Image 1: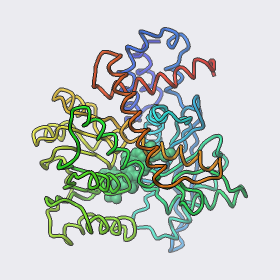
Image 2: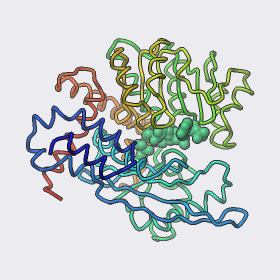
Image 3: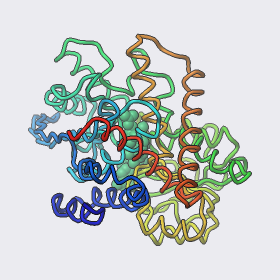
Image 4: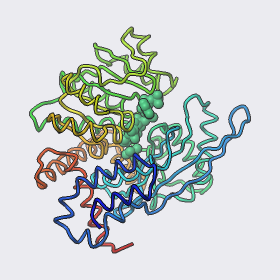
Length: 444
Ligand code: NDP
Ligand code: 2IT
């Protein structure tokens, strides 16, 4: 079947799942030259099989709030592809979650995980539960109820979840605790665990650090570095905070952070004590970014995003489709010359086109944010050895992996005739690895 027909069928069979359609379309558009070179992939129906998850689980998650009122949320786990390893991917708790979001994330995860060079298949899970404004007890009861069903479907050798939006150390702790109680086993079934009970050092920092390592590689190729550059970061959660820290370490100046209510602009740079303030605000008090503007007397734009400000580099690290075509024009006009995607699919296809037409250095999510799942892979390795490695050792491995992902994506773009197009390079390199594995293993 042609790639166009496959795409039509995906749209037809997955109605209304627009984020999933978008993710599939981008990959299919870039693998056209591969399919021409490899008719054996066409004959074996590799792409038809790839776009259909191996398994999708949807379940009821009932829980009781602090007032004794019963709520019912919906839980998801999509086990997308296990050709090169156990399903691996995060869990997202956000009111916008529905099957189309989990499928787009699970689909992207297949190629991202392949790029890491580690043995991990692709999966993703989540719920439309909104942790905002909930007490710790409510979050705990929700996580326990979520795990009351999920525990049947996960195992260190089959499916290993981790965090994503709305799921950090606190939620992973509650879910892991419930898993352990139900299974009566202490095993590496989650990554992003606390280092006291099986977590890897550097996992909390890994996505943001990896994003900056990758961006650094991309700049290095052009004989540039991050020193002295002004950086626009969106979001203020796990990825944004750790991208901020690594940017500061490398001499860059981060001038924006945001959340779903607005954006702050600090022309002096968010560094020193201000970083501790952000961590306390977001990870402990769980407050709004607006409070930063009040504390440090800087500009706050309600409902705004970072893309209207001047800068050199943009690191979108909040959510999907947060850079629209208009935003991309603004970034180009305001002098941004490099974009590194910390979030999953933060730029729309129209925005990516604008970047490419204007020769913006563009690091696509599947490659640039793969540091998180890479250290998850290292956490799995440590768990199976019952060992733990030092911070420096894991950080060094992470750096090496990000360098390799950059090199592989770059070399692949060159091989396929569009040197420097890392969207093409990352998609094709990830696809080739999974497609070959699927071919070797027969039609299953
Ligand atoms: P967090 O929950 O820690 O932080 C998310 C941040 O993005 C918050 O500041 C949040 O604001 C903001 N945000 C979320 N949804 C929206 C929205 N719809 N509109 C505007 N702002 C929004 O999540 P992470 O930092 O872990 O994840 C950020 C992105 O990075 C996601 O796309 C995730 O898939 C991706 N990612 C995460 C990895 C990880 O290891 N954690 C690995 C690879 C990718 P608010 O608090 O107001 O909701
Ligand atoms: O999107 C992602 O890569 C993640 N949320 C991390 C997945 C993982 O298993 O560490």
